Length: 330
Image (cartoon, rainbow, N blue to C red):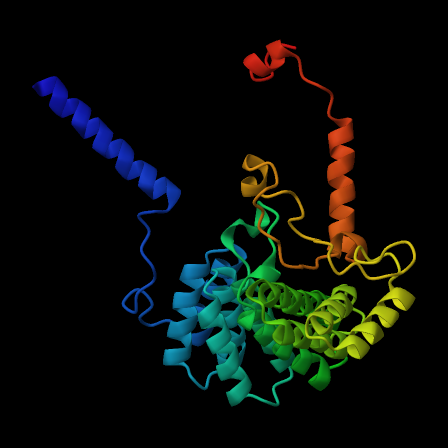
């Protein structure tokens, strides 16, 4: 019994010291701990937390600084750093709210462009998932509300502060957001095709062509118009779309070698269905038309496919012993 008590005591001490070493036992700063702090003391403590990436501690102290010295020397700078700390801690909603508050209170501040920039980054991050850093995902398949908000925020940044140091990066991000918004319209058009809403699909394609020029989604927008208007019996509009598509994007998958549009070709999911296979083709479900030519016109997708293909070529076949031993024996 005595030995058991000693073991339990040692384990409890180890766990306590381990939590302290990992920082789990540290409590955030309270108002009692900072009693008597001057504004400069607060700011120096905040800088230490920011430099060590202790975002929760920095946020707490920034909020205390603002509450105790709302009109002090560091008040406005602290508000900007609060936006950044909340963004780095992945509290994107709070970062956006803090940025909106700063823009509203200090519209003429020399660093208000920074608030717009971090707000845009937070809105972009909201549209991304947790696994985006680990797995290839398609953001255009998700709700694009936050992406649209980010596009508006960064566009306002460029319009109001074209010479801002954050403008070059904002322009690059706007290109990506614009491509994402355009592709989302094509996804919507493909869905409308699957529901038999051909007019809605054609309108989505036309919206892409009219509002998202020079994006990789324009060829698919023209193809959507051609297919949709054909199904609606609007031959003239369909022919016009085909003519523009063939003149500008002759390598589009929906066109044959002669430049004629193949209305029956299934560009996505064109493999035989399971029902068709088990019934030897007697029963088959016709797949609705769907368009996705990113592998041809989207440079990032094209480069990713080339990298994957090169990696597959470089991988040498593994022996049975290598597989069984998980690479220990070769």
